[in-house]
Image (cartoon, rainbow, N blue to C red; front, top):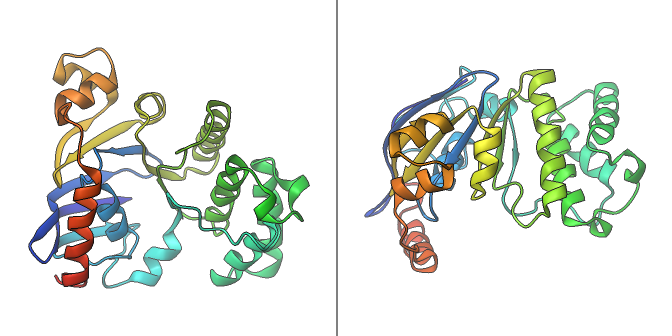
Length: 262
């Protein structure tokens, strides 16, 4: 479903993604892990057509994001790390707008909206303004919206950040059920290692722009002679606290100087 080969992304003199290659099978639940500033978000932006690669190739659902961006966009749904709903609209209106943008026929759009809002237990709040929702309710609505157009792939960039354990558990229950029911490929990032350990069928670890390990949770633990995925992650990436703010500043400067540079 996703094929990445020798992918590199540079912003002027900063290499954010450095010659990475990996594949994700159709219907797989795949975790993409790494410390802050490792290259996760840049990779996702390339996969979802928000950035163009400097070199290398990406194929998503049989389409090239550079040459066929519209076909690629119709192939995936996405839940960003930051909220992207319109707070001044109702839950159902947010679903409607998304369906219209993706040219989902009216009859199908309305039936699918009802199905998904019931699926994430928000149908009884369909006419409530989103600004009245809790963080967990908004996350569930974003998931429902991202699935409205029957995407083959759902991208989740730290989807449970800041959510309480009960909401996180419910959200993953929905996603695993969806994966089982519709065969949707799930590609997610998280800093909660227990989530990746429990949910992902395979895991890739990226650091300093390079893929440094890939395999099942059990294989990564065996490779690092550790007993938990968190210990395996630390063994692979080190225990030094990353200077996120400094790294982010450097990246933003590089982006301002060279965004669009291939």
